[in-house]
Length: 403
Image (cartoon, rainbow, N blue to C red; front, side, top):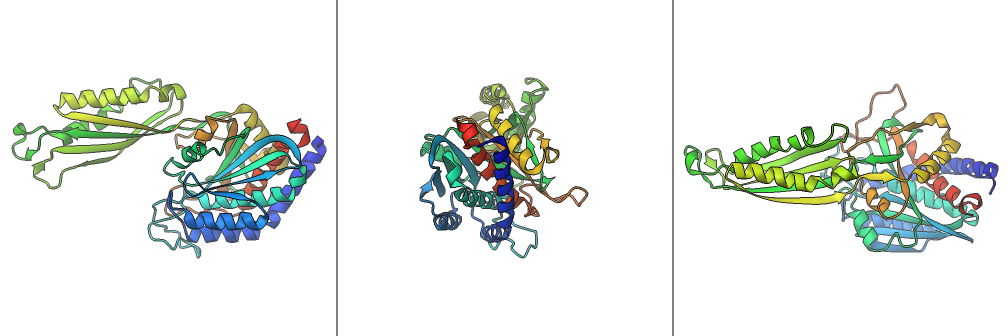
């Protein structure tokens, strides 16, 4: 396929995606009404499976939880390109008042995974229409449990990357106007770790503290002391966040408790720094606890690594994006310490993860961000997301790319 014909095919994809807009909006709204939490996405998976089977795909279900895998083999030999979307919702009570708002108390698609799933289904439909042009195979990964950093790991363990040469994915971004894309070379998103600290002291009467060992005081000191890991042990040019989100102890006002528990998250933007954080957290928490005569048990759980895209794959996404929507609609993404378990796939195969604008047009009132109970999504991003995903795979598997 020549460069000129490749651009023509991409333009056709954009138009074909636009023709699907009504179907995509309807499907996304149906998912939005019936959100499901991580590892509970049985209804969502069933709806996805039914759509794929109607398109003519043979599918593999219950992968890594409720994940679904479908392959599209072209008529010519070539590499395998994977496209991934996540399906799970969040434990958030929706406050949008949309006519298709969540019907399930305390569960909401507040991160737009309903849109991601819909876009990948749209890409599957578009690519099926272009099957005769494929030099290789497209693998579609519909993943569960991204929000708890479990899904990608489980999918990889069950072999979804076997034979895959490259992988691509996107995430909607409500602070970027629909119709725009943001890419970044190298590290895009931070690593994620969970920190659990259990403190054992000696409980007693709140009026007689000298006869106790107070784990609340020790825990408070640890919360403050852990910040020295950022301010005094790590370069200011290496972004790190240490956040304790839970400190629990005691049952009443006049009793010093016997135990306390701290739970938090560690985010880094450097694989090198990431590798040092476990020792640092254990040392600081343990030393402070000992100073307050408490015993500390520290559990440091690595969840996802730093998300680092492959330069060549980023360049390919940029090439397709510019052909579809113009260079003026692509910007450089700012780094963020938010995490994404797509990073686990990138530890195994080259690939690229990028942002797709899902917010209001520039100049309009700012949208609420991800994970907010009033989060909304500009549905104009749906056909573009489907076309972009399809275009990335199709262009990568064209004759001039795969030869």
